[in-house]
Length: 234
Image: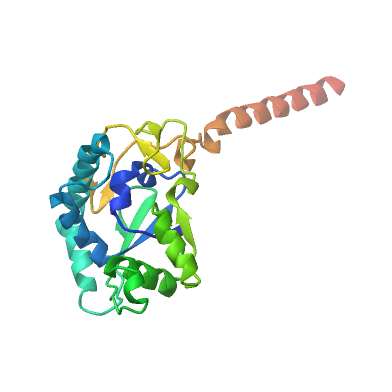
């Protein structure tokens, strides 16, 4: 299973992150979940006004997901001990979320804000790459020689043939953005979302056991033919 560190606001901007072809675990600092509330109430989340309403609607759905009792309970348990990780939170069949009670220690000075610092500390602690849509953040990480890998969200390559959110090239972000469709309703059961299986997902491939009756029938015909041939030969 691939693992990445990111902040959940990226789910609201790039919905395809929630529709991977193969299982993925996203490791998220707790502070970045709380940041969703500030973003929801802000005047503008993204610079493209035509996309801002969609992103804010997705943020509200993400907040609703994290506020579900079984999800909130798993997150609150992490607050008892610094750097404690939550039990796996199942978002869908292919997406698992782990929330970390990270702590900002200002190790990287004023070059990074508290959320960025906790992303960096979490990535270093877990030895994982960070997903980001901010080229300027990637540049600062490189210049600071922190020794962590920051992957641009456009390079993840999660596109499937029938993605529920149609993609379009957005000049503002310099990466793939999506049509004005909100995230699918969060119908989690014990933390898991039900939804359509992406094309290419293993569960969409016919099982080999469906061919078993044909194979057995063929073998039976061969056996009967052999017995008839032996009887005629005698």
